[in-house]
Image (tube, rainbow, N blue to C red; front, side, top):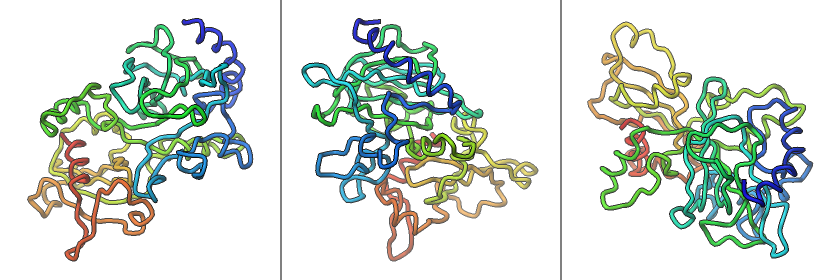
Length: 336
């Protein structure tokens, strides 16, 4: 461990112990726990500027008047050196395995970042920690980490982030497709992909704020699997595809259908939330599929679209709802 991280690790141990005692799936990735204090959100999240509300540092359609997606939480710094630079230790949010580390800040808007794989209730979840200034020694792909273990130091890499809003960008994601690098090469010819399957486009985010709120001390027992299964549906699509990686990785999200079990599976009916997360996949038999189209939009929850339009996955025309180019791209990436 470097000198700075070594010094910070001992400081973090008390926060780690407090987190472990709660026995919840995820711990806060820093010592900032202000979320659990009344009115503490402004101390927990860093807004995009001092005159903006704390919600601009949260997850969802929170920027550009609700039309820009922010796929994580910007968790404020608490500790600084004499030059005002953040020195907060960044900790693994749960037991897991390091899958990817980007050491070159200029290659991503995340700056230096780490991706860790967790398995909770049989569900694979990938946490991401961005804008790091320093990566702890030994934090490399394949490394097993414990929840609360110091993995890095908070920083401001990757974007123009002022000292006064220094933060760690924290995400909780589902992985879309093992074949992402090949899909990207085919669908974005000439565009460079420096991060392979760990490109942010291949990670569909869940709302960490809702998950932390579900785990709030004193709250009823929280189930991450039930949380994912109970996402609000933005739209439902039917795909004529039967063998894509998501089906094997997220078997807990695949529903049962006696007709398809009897006749054979010819496609899947997939429910997507407003961020494109596929949270329910129903196998369909050929007798249940009326359209020859490879991808068909079946339905749209208009109220959910009105509340969360920023991913622009669907659009309403005079002829009804349609998948946008972005929406079709999201589905094609899923089933590639």
